[in-house]
Length: 392
Ligand SMILES: Cc1cc2nc3c(=O)[nH]c(=O)nc-3n(C[C@H](O)[C@H](O)[C@H](O)COP(=O)(O)OP(=O)(O)OC[C@H]3O[C@@H](n4cnc5c(N)ncnc54)[C@H](O)[C@@H]3O)c2cc1C
Image 1 (cartoon, protein in one colour):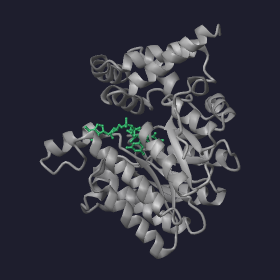
Image 2 (cartoon, protein in one colour; image 1 turned 180 degrees about the horizontal axis):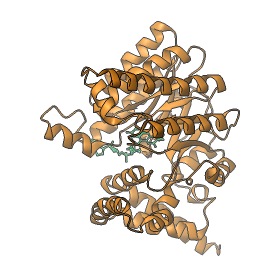
Image 3 (cartoon, rainbow, N blue to C red; image 1 turned 90 degrees about the horizontal axis):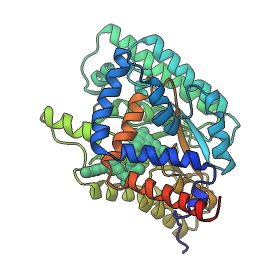
């Protein structure tokens, strides 16, 4: 069995200029600084709300690094650059937490545009949406808690379901698989139920609708096994994006504040074990499952490569994908793609102020995860050094 290596920085940063690398170096140094991030996240949020002129600063730093642009056409250079290395783009309209019906309709229309654009385009292998981009969080929370809805809320929820249905119908019509992103546990049941319904409807011949499973949750291995069993029994493809989960701090804080059992693991290795077990479960059922492993964790990526090799599954088997976020872990994406694996990157886009929650999550993730930003830093430094010593 041959091991995949993520150490080749020449491959990893082939499409980055030295000045782009130096900018990334500065950025990861900044977000690797716990106290700076702790201070800047609330400052920037308040500054946007009160009209302080921070937009340019954010646009030229974190936004430029982690996002494709403000609209789909802005993202074209990123799409083309990634595709030159056979890395697909998942256009991620990263607007969340809105309140108005008109905003939800326009977000839904934007997602439909990403599906139209991806139709027949190998460089755009998936589309994605976040439920909180097309529905009010408070409504989702109420439905999730099985609280009785007023007539107006019933009507509002019917409109939410219509938006979800529209997205899945178009994905099915255009053969563009779509991810339901996962969010906080207090709104996740309602999303799981909708994703399940859509999977049964649209995954009969091919995996079109993917639900996301967050393995930091203590109940998710059971959930995954139940879903696979259901897919087998009813004869549709179970399709899953596996992630560790992006709301670790919020989940713990809310459970403590409201005095209920914390629904997530408290130790990193427990989440890691669950994630790796989920990979094994999917691979043991690969005849009935399509899988996208959404992670920057090298060990988990190595494990999936190993499991594929053990089962003699070709590197480019269409049921198995690796995915990372734009601006992160290029050493994984580019080296996997070079070895022939199916790789895609989320390329978030949207107005700077609208993608702020996404950017803050990325900054917090990079400061809270020991090693993530230092790994990025050391790879960038290695590459800069390599270029200097080769006279490039
Ligand atoms: C393509 C892609 C799509 C994604 N989609 C979603 C999505 O739909 N929903 C979503 O929630 N997230 C999503 N994420 C983010 C993801 O959940 C992780 O937050 C992020 O990828 C970091 O985890 P990792 O596996 O890459 O790496 P690692 O650095 O190995 O793991 C970090 C993760 O470990 C977990 N963790 C950290 N500390 C602890 C601890 N003390 N105890 C237990 N667990 C801990 C947390 O989940 C943390 O995010 C996505 C990520 C990618 C790459």
